[in-house]
Image (cartoon, rainbow, N blue to C red):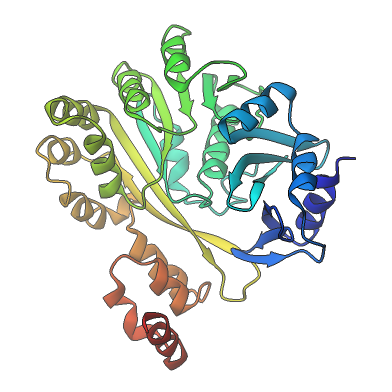
Length: 363
């Protein structure tokens, strides 16, 4: 058994989500959003290299030593898969390994908004799942793809780096391609997907202009495209896509986005009030008659009004969802305040100890 498995199994037994390895320091794990050290000795540089090489294919190891970064997937058979990032830093080699459960949890099990099922019924368009690193975007997308797999006869192509959740074929046919192993780049794989008669394409991450442009093209061609972005809400997501392109291309991109954008699901993970877990808070933008004109005309700030006026359809703002979790006593006032956009709405709900903690942080 590779040495690193001991740390990973210890992390799983403690309910952790991420293993952080840094040369000359003890391994640390993230449990419910908080880092804590494992009770083991610091790992010297040479030992760290041996530890990482033990789980890395030879071709990827050579790339890591040459380029100082590497992404891959690792599996403890029958237990779990992990998304792995190798890196070098001031102290030497290191890595971060994120737990990917072997079982794909359902929309109900993850307590995701029920309106996500409606989004899964769309036949075309661009659906974006957004949020910061570690907010559960991949888990949400996996649950949505699994729901489609259970209920619809579709041809689904996923393009990922690396493959995280492995989907069995149920009603749908799912082809999963890993950048580096099965294709050279997201753009190359997207061009190939256009010719492979897909109903649905999943892009693991829209990292660059080419990937965004091709994803938009696929969506305007009548395919349903799922993708992720590192943005915190719907208006910022639209701005991010448009601003990625040169000024002379932006009118065309606005027109394509206005035609194809079907939903934006933004999510944050909040620590529960009892400190024993985390729960998702969501902002949801769905199709709306006023959305295309809003995007074409560059009136992105009006997206907030569209969401607030359409709560009956399942739309919600992040702050409203945080307030809901707070009123249900699921999260603390401090957690809601820290994750909110308009902090003035949450400041009156803070206790004296929270206010003092904020003053100390500002000092």
